[in-house]
Image 1 (tube, rainbow, N blue to C red):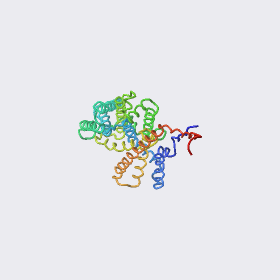
Image 2: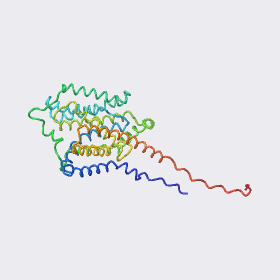
Image 3: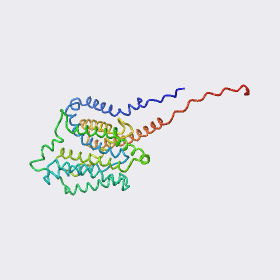
Image 4: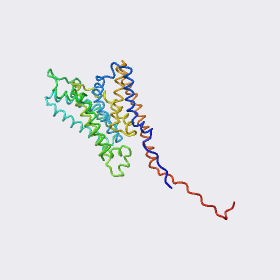
Length: 352
């Protein structure tokens, strides 16, 4: 007797969960295009979205990495502010050429990420508390470097080659959009196709099981924090090329959108777990929504209201998707019940 077939994994509900956020992006764009036909569906709007949302997208990808391992890095906003101030301080105040200044900041971001991972894993401090503490220390260093003021380039300005890191275009589109695509592709390859990514997911879903199978959970968590620090350093370089002024408090404005994008991204493409492509889609939803709201003439307070409300929705949806994924995995792993056996023939001597 053939065993009963199991239901296919990719059902209609799964497709809606995986690609619903992408469809929502298209619907939002269509709705705002119909409401604002003269201003929204234009090349200028597309260029503005791709350019202005590149740094939030990069920072959301940075925030995603510790979330993969079940941790959070609340220092990314402070790290972004310190990184962009350090680049401008080295170039403007110390007279460094911009390439070594950028490389130094990238190395510093990597070191800060490793420090965060070591404090969390080897210091046995909750990631919320640990990264909030290191972030406050970075904010103090930022204030010490700038003396509470701003770093402004002289009359000669910044080197054009440095500002072109953000201001230039390629194939008719802003270059920062290609940075986001390249970074998302690299993180997707690492997380979805390499053993490192599978180990990170195992560490995040079940650290005890990871220990039992011999995965060094502490080391891989430090790897995730190190990747975050490196990406934050890169985002700081781009922010310096964009702003061209060292503002010690600017990084804090990017903290909430980064976590909104990372958490909302775990409900798309691969529902139930953080993933690079889902994070990019989530940032696209936020970018289209905020741009449309801005062109409708909404008040300034609608932006934090939108981000905060979306964060609550993202956390709820991420938790629901994770629970659904676990239930689906448990159902697939449960062996099918054997078919009922045929009743034994009654004996000729059995009583009626």
